[in-house]
Image (cartoon, rainbow, N blue to C red):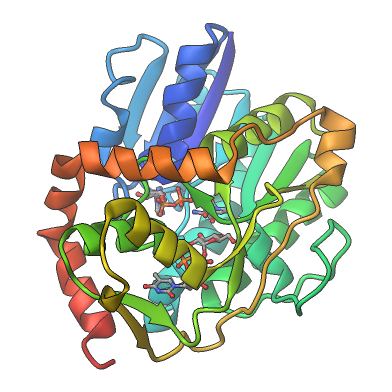
Length: 337
Ligand code: NAD
Ligand code: DAU
């Protein structure tokens, strides 16, 4: 049995990871440490909560005593760190919690892992650490780090630290850098779920700037399969880019969602641009394909239809979210535009 500490497992990507891994394999036992911030939701883990190989602990990755206790109590040998403040717009409104969780929290996990001889540490990072691309080219693992937002700089800081712990202490670490995820259970502050839900509610769809920024979209299960493979087979100290060769302009995504839902384009509202908005992300994932044999399986056409259908079928899930704290956040953020 592989005993794994998964952090941030009540969020979008982490909960999909836990639900799928427990379903797919019987040789893993998972402890999920999550602070349950606004983005953490135990409802995401309904299908896993009664599994005897799953345990939830509410707590902060910055709490080293708690992390040490969990690692010892559950005989943890592997750590996969999903926990983070993950939303760029929030990092622009207030950056401190981003550095606290994403940098200090990762430092705590690394220190405690090192003292407890953890066999493998996987840091779930992002392509945003590379900064922004012009109209051509791709991020490779040797693209210089050049983050532009408080969020991406905090993730870049964590990445540097993870590499330093490999270099200095010989820890067996890997870093994954993935592009924009979409799929079920994504918190409705991110582009795709926000646009689906606003369209369903006949609310305006706020498109930043000229809507021509490009993101490289990947279905969440494809990302998680890559993380599983990196955990099992990734070489010590290595970085693996993960992407799906699926570049889309934001406005294309928005129009596609409106079309799928049978709504008019008059709902689109161009708003003031995000400060420091990265123009284009595009990932070269040939390394993980060549070294580990990973490939994305989901086409965007299928994945986006499944995702919109999921939000249609799970109104209760998102209605509870938007009727609470998120609504205030939304008004504060866009009220002035
Ligand atoms: P999310 O915001 O949906 O979830 C984050 C989770 O971390 C939440 O459950 C939250 O409660 C938890 N958390 C936050 N602070 C914590 C703390 N101090 N201690 C313990 N738990 C804490 O994020 P997501 O979209 O699922 O992203 C997961 C990871 O993947 C992040 O590290 C993010 O940087 C990375 N990533 C995300 C994307 C994407 O498109 N969403 C792409 C590439 C990489
Ligand atoms: O690339 C990976 C990153 O993708 C992850 O590391 C981050 O955690 C994740 O949040 C995501 O970052 P982005 O900033 O690219 O995602 P977001 O969904 O916030 O925005 C996607 C694009 O859509 C971006 O160009 C900004 C634009 N946008 C976003 C929102 C929320 C709009 O035009 N309107 C909006 O209301």
